[in-house]
Each structure stands twice: as C-alpha cells, then as structure tokens.
Amino acid sequence: MYCIWEGKYVTDWQTEWGIPLLEAHESLSSTNSRARELLQGGAPSFSAIVAETQTQGRGRNGRYWCSPRGLGLWMSFVLRDAAHSSPSLVPILAGLAVLDALESVCGNLGLGIKWPNDIEIDGRKVGGILCEVFDKDSLMVGIGINLKQKQDDLQSQMLDSATSLFIATGRVLSTASVMGPIIKQCKNLLEPLPTMLSKDLVEKLEKKSTVMGLRVSLANGLEGSVVGFSSMGAMIVMAEGVLHHINSSGAVRCYAKDFSEETKRK
Image 1 (cartoon, helix red, strand yellow):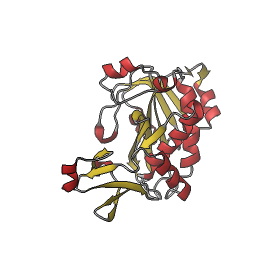
Image 2: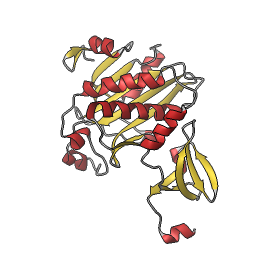
Image 3: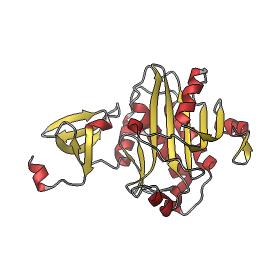
Image 4: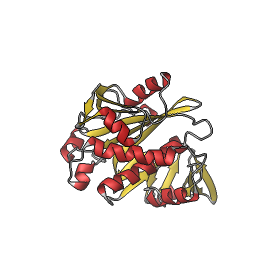
C-alpha cells in the first residue's frame, strides 16, 4: 500500500477530498473485495480504495472487468446507513455523480448513462459502476473509468465497443484528477442516501439516458419502448399499451433503435 500516491501523501488526498480513509494500492484482486474487508473492520462511509490494477476485477453478474495497470481509474468506496434506501438507487445516483464529475473535468463529451450502471460517450462504454450489498445497512460501490487507453489497447482486449477519456479528449488525465471530483460528487448525491430520486434527478436521468426512446426486448417476451424512469430508479417501458417498471437489467434482452418488421409482428 502506498504512502505517497500521485505526487502527494495519501493522507493529503484524503483531507482534500473530505473522506475518512483513502488506501492506494499497486495491485488488488478487486477494490470492492477490499471495500468489503474495510466494512468488516468497521470503516465509516466514504472510506475509499484505489488500485493501479485489479487482477480479478468484476462487473455486474460476475462479468470480468478488464483493469490494465495504470490505464484507468479502478476505485471503490463504502456506504453505511443505507437500510432506509433501496440498493437499486445507488448505481443510478453514483452514475449521475460520475457524469457530473467527468463533465467538470472534461467538458461536454456526449456523456450518458446506459441504464442502470454503464457510463458512455457517444454510445461507447467508458466506465461502469458495481454496487454490492454487504449487509442490510452497508454497501460497496465500485467505479471503473477508462482513462488512458488508446484504440489499439481496447481492440487488443476485444473491447471494440468501448472508449476512454484519452480517445475522447486527447488528454492524458491523472487518476487523482478524475477520482477527486467523482468522490466529491458522490458525496453530494449519496450523503445522506435518499429514499427516492427527486423530480429534478429523474428529469436529469431521462435527459442523460442513452436508452430513452429506444425499443427494448424484455426477457418475458414483451417488446416496447423506453419512455422514462421512476423515482425508485426503475426503467419504464411501454409495451402493448401497458407501462412496465423494470427494476433489473436482467429483465432486458436487448435495445435497438428499431426491430425488424418480423419482430414487430410477434
């Protein structure tokens, strides 16, 4: 574990960002796994971890998350006092916080949220959020952002649908210059953790969503259009004249601007 990271003592970053604990590591199996250990040890909310690489980084549903050394922001923080709120709200709120942070650093890049947890630039994935429940009162929030990859790096990792902040901006951004604003914006939206999204946040989510208006095929066989989001973070789909509130990405088979005429008739 580093004492000096990104040109400063780790404790100085901790103080600057207003968090109770920051750990900076050369390598971890997973920052969320380390966050779990911190929760087991009684660490307070917004204790944070960052690593130069993850050897077993993971996304939703146990999918492998590629975390090449020194090319991205691989971080987690812990949340307590979450029993009164729905865990499904956290990735939405964290996603909105990440958008605000990236826009403050990079400007308007065509950033958006692919519900519920992917961060995109012009439809290409630049980051993702993984929230995992520790107990009824506590969560681990993992955030991964592609910072410095070139197009060849992503193609070699078979990530043709991905992008990075370097590709989008032409700038090599330090990890701390992105992590700091993300931590601060997450604190703004998640401290204290709300019980539902405000009207303003629902409108913001709908404005920043990359799936609004798309056709969607659901796992139950229905097909419809994404028409909005609820105050609980559910995606609202109009299918066969009925509004359906979708709470899990597992209920979605695919999105498309349009389906084939044959599919439409089914």
